Amino acid sequence: KLLSVAGAYWRGDENLKMLQRIYGTAFPTREGLDGHLAMLEEARKRDHRRIGQELELFFFDEEVGPGLPLWQPKGTVLIEELEKLAKETERNAGYQQVRTPHICKDTMYLKSGHLPYYAEHMYPPMEMEGVKYYLKPMNCPHHHKIFGSVSRSYRDLPLRLSEYGTCYRYEQSGELFGLMRVRSMQMNDAHIYCTIDQFEEEFLAVCNMYSGYFKLFGIEKYVMRFSTHDQEGLGVKYVNEPDLWLKTEEMVRNALVSGGINFVEEAGEAAFYGPKIDVEVWSAIGREFSLATNQVDFVQPGRVGLKYVSAEGKEETPLCIHRAPLGTHERTIGFLIEHYAGAFPVWLAPVQAVVLPIAERHLEYAQKLRDRLKEVGVRVELADDNTLNYRIRQAQTQKVPYMLVLGDREVESSTVSIRLRTGENLDPMSADEVATMMVDTISAR
Figure (cartoon, rainbow, N blue to C red):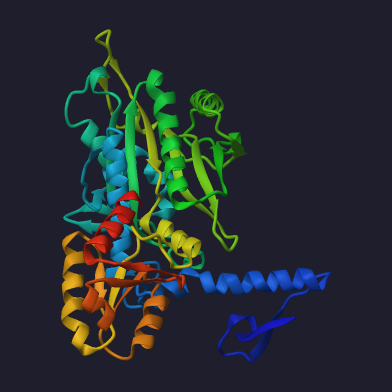
């Protein structure tokens, strides 16, 4: 079957002739072709770039720059709800929030090892007063500074520092893809400083945090990918500490086995400072993405001089775990858009309810209902322009979970007719009952 046609200049030169490029596909059976075409159509419907524009969540602008998303108010609601979820989870797990600047002197990255090992992914430096500054590609060197700012004892460990930090990475233009691959990202980042004896418990706690998030979002298809170093990359791609590499990789392997966690091992994909777990997930349309990470660092704490006093009174270097269970806002939201096809669960939906008065005489009652729901924290809008059918279609297009329809019957009985975005109708309720139902649904996530 022919799928599409497009123009292309011969050898990519606009001064040469324009050619016609024809795209097509073929399968051994009609069933195989039909299945493939159905998958392509589903992929088109769920594409986060298309849905993001239709729901007014985010967009890109050439004057701002490629890979630099601009978040609309509704998209910002998604960010705030994910941050709220993460901060609640982390607070209960003993994390402390910190804040760090967006730029940093080159001397800190030279000391941490990001220069030269990560230089190709960093924006070029800017020079001011004879000093080079970089946009930060990650938060870890800043968090190391916070750890080292005061004297630490073994009693302070494990110390868990978390931050929704904005980072900047110069991804190649050809690698940019919607929200899935960007140059500006807000990362659900944290660093855990611990002793060797505390490592396994802390590492597994992070893995369990992943599992909790995935269960909440209904993500069933994922795999823990254990990335190790390869010998050929020592001193080039990886820090040249062969014995420490083997020791740390064995620690991670043992932790995964003792925790009963299924994983696949892959050589050559580790971070420059240690082995890592990348959590690979599959979207509803079959796209595979690395959504979260859990990394072990045996290099940077020693490089930047981090110390704590042990129970024996000796100075020791802590181990550091880098983790981001919700990855970046950009990739996580891009994934969730496709996962839910834009129909987010009620707690996450940018607009949770829309009030629809049938006629102008019902407007006063509609305003009171809207105000009542706002009082209890529901994100609600009132739509009173155009016909009722048009407004219902608009609410369904915007994937609003609850449509609250008010007419003469509802005004007279002080009730609300409830229509779900699925087309199902609930029994009429009072305004207080609607408020209670929505608050319970939202708080239960």
